[in-house]
Image (tube, rainbow, N blue to C red; front, side, top):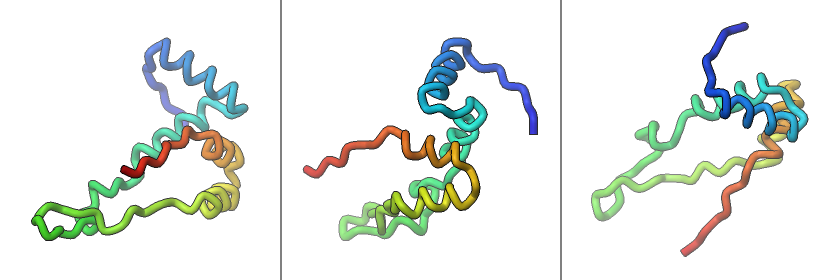
Length: 97
């Protein structure tokens, strides 16, 4: 579906530059960002929490994504650009403390 969006000029220029570096399209980047934003978050799911001994909510499970399964799912859906964008995503460093 086609639609029109008003996007800040600087943000659009940055998005186009990132898309070019990733060898993908602006459309694929926007779709990826929307899918990520609309994905259910653990905080939105009350079943993801259980009361701890202190009475405070405790996350039941981390829900880590299996990188290989996620990549294969995206490729199986036939969206190669999405798979490439997923591989190029920034990774968060794990901290244990």
